[in-house]
Figure 1 (cartoon, helix red, strand yellow):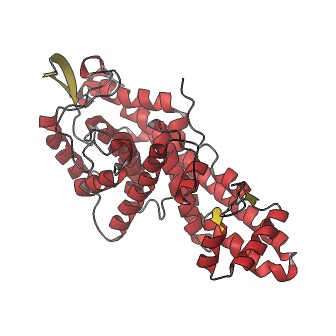
Figure 2: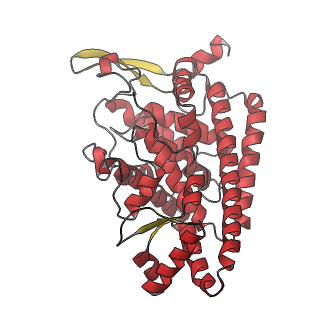
Figure 3: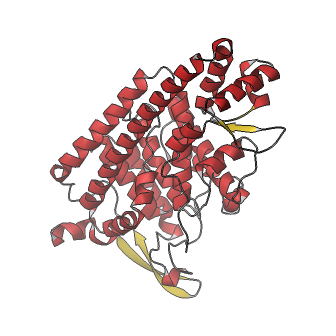
Length: 393
């Protein structure tokens, strides 16, 4: 990128005193970038990402019931986005927590992930009811995200009134200091105007990439900024019709390439390198869409093969098929919950689950004699790929 272009895209550094030391806080320039983005440099990545989203959207229209995919994909995105922030919860931990079973990680970790699921679902409900993607909705999402857990004392649902920072033990040795609190609403008002302004006519995927970085640079909350910023990607794509259902989980790509992710966020601020960031982001969307579509096809194949096995049960097949269908939406199941959901007797559900265990379709994972938990294990393994907690040193 030419130096003259780069300078026009750079923000302003403001010198202020925080806790008795001088810091340089970053004030990002408004969106869209000036000079205009060189979209022609991104045509290949943009075409691939759009094709990936198109295939994913097409698959949702062919499915007899998209709910089982939504249930698990939203949770997959929640798990991975929270892991980027340091939680150690796994996919299994979250599903066990939702079934009121003990997990192997601190409860606060699982609560944070569960809150992420609730925050995304709230945002989608509001958008579908006609509410705009706005600062108000972002605050609502943040309030749910930080309800309970470690962030409960970080003013959930409120924009910060003090200086925050990224990296380092204090603002003076931080790797990045976002705008000072007295300039925060100026940045956020400009951010919201961009969300609502269609005159720039940029591709929606480019919009999503710009919005994510700008939100991360503004960093308007005391905690939870990264998770909200990644949530905004999916919510914006749904709000603008690029995704018919929230089946894209971009956080898995960002987690896998997290060093490059953080480096490019910073390069946008220091060099105005928007095209480099967007090329990376669009590659991530394409990869995530392909991963989601492949996983969906694998799931459907697994379900079909397992149905064929169940049909061999004869008289026991109908109730076992109903259990298998229920476990597509909730792959961890207790006997009592299944009986209530399907309006079957406890003995009928017990016999059906025992048949499924004998066929190798489900496994009993609690090791208890009473209040046992059964898992659709191959299904869980399939969808949980990539959700292993990050190794901490």
